[in-house]
Length: 249
Length: 51
Length: 150
Image (tube, rainbow over all chains, first blue to last red):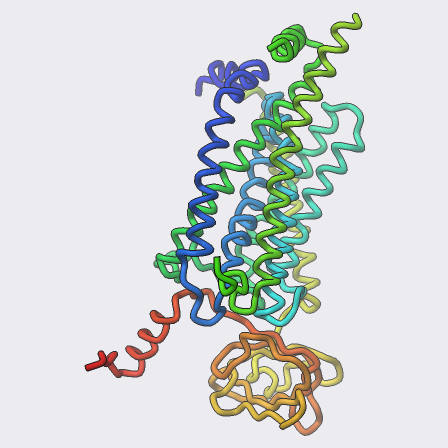
């Protein structure tokens, strides 16, 4: 594999330039998808045969839950790039991803709880799915705390990457918990091997919202990584020139 | 818009709290980093000027 | 790959494997404390704890729900299609509680075999569909065809 080209695009300076060009377009596409997804979820989709209108919480709950797992994989993957191959950008992306992932995990737990109260009859149960998602939140918070606690950024990145990699074992547990244990949380709907057990009119807004959430994360992580670069490389000439140029405009 | 839509079949509290909370978190997380980037750039320029 | 990088990669892999084993052990140890429910057959066979609270899960038997007038007290039977357990409960039932629905009740089994629940939770399935589709499916299942108005 040709790593020289990868290294060029993964250099903080190049990343800074191309992310400035890409981020606004991602942001616009994300906003359009949000409008379409919300209209679909709130107006176009019919109420559920058992849960009535309360099922519309699915359109903010499921994308958050998916993102909480996806961002964790990104964070661990980027951390591994930094830890093993010394790709500096990897460390920065991992650091930039953690708070976004933590917020999505919080949203997944909060919206799930607001769905659980009227449907199950409780805001919270110590069910395997809910507990493993809570552990995921603690893993994110642990990572963030570690970054704040260790002064030296190199050491902090290394420790964070190790924590993130160890924590990846929780990802399959969150995903398969509903199949491995007798949980109150129902089984998978969309990712079943046979056809998804959700009506197409309800599935389409869900997929649109999930794509909107994914683009949202991509946009935000680009901006956050730029901030990491500015902090980490603030003494380099290119950052100083860049800052002077941007502020002069 | 009619009130029936906002009533959400009696689940208004749960549905709108979920959507509202998501909106607040997503908007705050979109604005925060952009403001942080601007202030970082400003700080770097100030420091460069002091040298 | 250079030897040092290979070494780092192996270390990372070992850490992940170690973390995995540790998590699996913790979850096994905690399984009894995590929300785990017994089926009516397990309860009848005496596998559920006798002296302390536990959870029992099953489908609410059709026509078994009896409500006491002017109170929140309710009595119903749950089944796993093999055995049945009668449950008594006093309180507000979740919106999804209905006959034929899966529920999980938390409480104690009295010496007379009746399960006295302090909490009743409804479990919903992973199917989402509009009401019209659901009634069409139900009609198809029961062998009747949808009659169109003349």
